Length: 514
Ligand SMILES: NC(=O)C1=CN([C@@H]2O[C@H](COP(=O)(O)OP(=O)(O)OC[C@H]3O[C@@H](n4cnc5c(N)ncnc54)[C@H](O)[C@@H]3O)[C@@H](O)[C@H]2O)[C@@H](O)CC1
Ligand SMILES: Nc1ncnc2c1ncn2[C@@H]1O[C@H](COP(=O)(O)OP(=O)(O)O)[C@@H](O)[C@H]1O
Ligand SMILES: [K+]
Image (cartoon, rainbow, N blue to C red):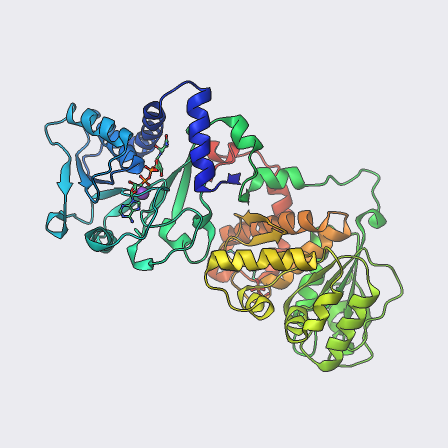
């Protein structure tokens, strides 16, 4: 699914109106009807008090439409106009008149703090104060209203985007944003929904399809791509009937040091489970018995050193190399990295201590094999590119880094983002159970295993991240978040493949909706 900027969405509205020969009021009615249907399906006529707070723009207009439709269906609705400006939009005004025709309880005009209503914890708040047209940070009594609503325990449903949040630019005031329990967004999710600093305001979200012009949506280059099952299905490369182990490549995993040999075991196993034909682990001597016992399928080559890696040498041509998991920061290891990068032309997956060693020895950056995949968690990323001002600044810096060094960068976390040049791919699978030691080692093994099978570096990253998250979701479903361990995620990679083409159980899943 594509993620568009606010400007692109306004353009989509405009083109839709022209091509479908409808008015903007018709489009708003369409949007409001979708909102109403979502609520009606869930409330089923329940007399719960619904407080709808409408701004004076088109987001407020949406609030008025859903208010009118709810009133017409007998719901218990109070509509408030957050009267922060006299510049009301045309569609707001049209719908303001319309709602007056269906009820004697006209919208309540709010002009300040004295007008804040009493809201009980069992009530529902609908937030239609500001949408994607927010052009400055809410201040004065409007900010206080947002804070007042945030203090309420009532369920808060945001229309299009929580009020006070920009769809794709940085926040100035975190105190002036509505904290929604659920967000219903039109046509496409917004970038702010996926970034660590702002995703918390959105909570869960559903995308309501308001039939914006398909040709425009199809042909427009988005600001980011969301990766869910339908995209992953397209990326999958079929296993050949007459394929042999050579067809699926020979991955080399360079990992481990004394006390951290588990990292080598996890990434080697993950490379196998995702489908590599052969995997060789290169480890310090102390890892020999561990690897041979833990993974009899793997071949093992050892360093001359007992406890750390000092010279990486091997007598075959690997199809992909994954390096860094648990290797530590010994000087000899840094020298080994330098030599290996210099001598190799195939893309690497570079993780963990390999990244930290690069951060501490920036001359290594120039040696990075082109199209390598770097997989930092936020701490490793900070060491690599320095501090950032906010999430958007971080994305810009990572894009520059990716362009300059011609590498793929995977920013790990909830909603892992893969950056390649100026393109962003946001992963939707995964869960907080995966915040457990070794799950990153599993991911580097997965991406290395896919590279070795011939997936190109970007595809190996985006598809691998989806599969890793999906295996994590399956694992959490079996044992709950807290019990998930990295080894379980790896064990479920096979289930993740089966799930990729399993018959969908729900309509939403079938439609590829969140
Ligand atoms: N254009 C269309 O046909 C459609 C628009 N839709 C709705 O329209 C919304 C966008 O509407 P608008 O562009 O009118 O913008 P909004 O309704 O988001 O709000 C903009 C209005 O609030 C004012 N404003 C912005 N920031 C403020 C602040 N901090 N303090 C006080 N006032 C502030 C602006 O000057 C403007 O008058 C979308 O989010 C969506 O909800 C939907 O109805 C779908 C169809
Ligand atoms: N809250 C979360 N939601 C989804 N995925 C997560 C979450 N927390 C961690 N992960 C995933 O788990 C992995 C953790 O990697 P990392 O921090 O490198 O772990 P380690 O270094 O212990 O192996 C990443 O792929 C990350 O995206
Ligand atoms: K809103």
